[in-house]
Length: 291
Image 1 (cartoon, one colour):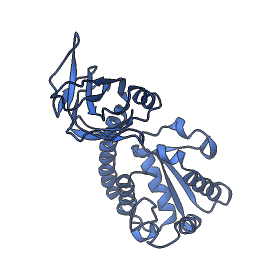
Image 2 (cartoon, one colour):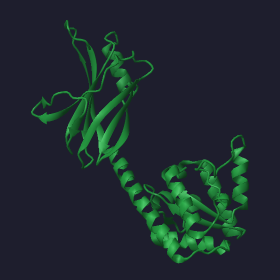
Image 3 (tube, one colour):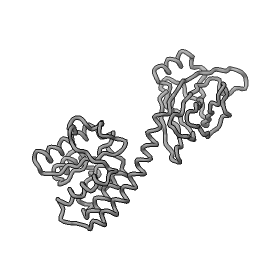
Image 4 (cartoon, rainbow, N blue to C red):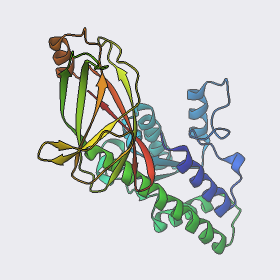
């Protein structure tokens, strides 16, 4: 339930920084270190959970939503606190925070952070108690510095991804023009506002129509930015949107679809799924919005 790149970096840190053999590590997020192809993964995970000396839970937002992960955490807590047969280490990874896990089996438990040097040093000490191999502290320190840089980059990207929540739909309009020479006689306009605190570049869009919507006419994405006093920029396939600016795009519809049908679908958010490709601070993301 965590990004595979983050999991791989943590496993590398543990193995290369403490001397633990990779074949002694089981990680459900990494191919080759998880359940073998064709095996029953639930019994396999439980077997490793019951035999592990150190159990590390990487606490992400998706972790708290997974009943299976919560059951694993309960079993790990039982082994560590009741049977005293394993060490249980909990590390938060952004964008999760302490309040997300201050409940259930985690209530009152001390949590570490993946981007905190002291938390990582504590993990090393716990691993060292169970294994006879001890590498020089300088080796661990070098590996930890590399890992923390990776986490810094991860956190920066997560921060940018979280800012996508501040790109909001302000309104959706429908327009009909049955004049001759007009290719798209029925359109839906989506008007959005950039409230991320950063300039963003709109680079493209995809549209998946709802079940009751007649399939729109295929076309390339075009955007425009509101310039004030009812003025809009020229339509463009790629456009820069400043912080606080409103922008829009339109999708061609089948003109046989009635206005009442379109309004009803919009009221129930069943027009379709809009996917926007957005660049923020040099990184590309995909934003989805249900219309």
